[in-house]
Length: 162
Image (cartoon, rainbow, N blue to C red; front, top):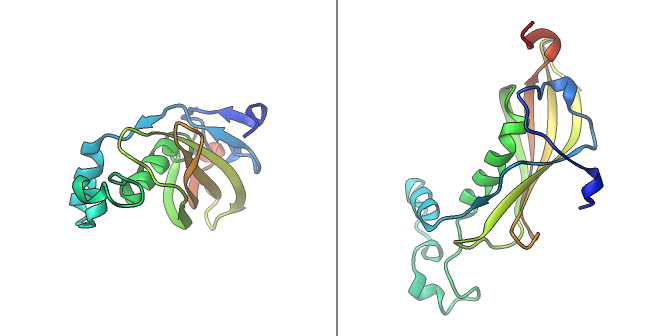
């Protein structure tokens, strides 16, 4: 990623008009994955895969240790992106193309980036639809997760306080 093309945005002003197709944002915060988060969320969604819980068994598996559940990875990446992409969201329309590209382990630190892929008119005049491509990288800058997300976002012309 060329740092000159990456903007950092943390904004309550992230209305529809503010997003430019082709822009890439590096989100402000990173997040180190704690074992508690992986185990808690994995249990809450009733994922019983031993790869997330059984350290002893995983010592002889290809990665040699437990792997973070992909749902946790995805939630963290989209969550970090939300401050800049969902602050003025009216509705989440959909998420497609989810790819878990590299394993995440306890203690890894994740960072999120977002590319604005498209903007389109909505059926309502007070909002528009923005399509984002989110991707997360670990502390070694290895892409671990990516997805495409469509969001109905408020227009400043209708919603910004006077």
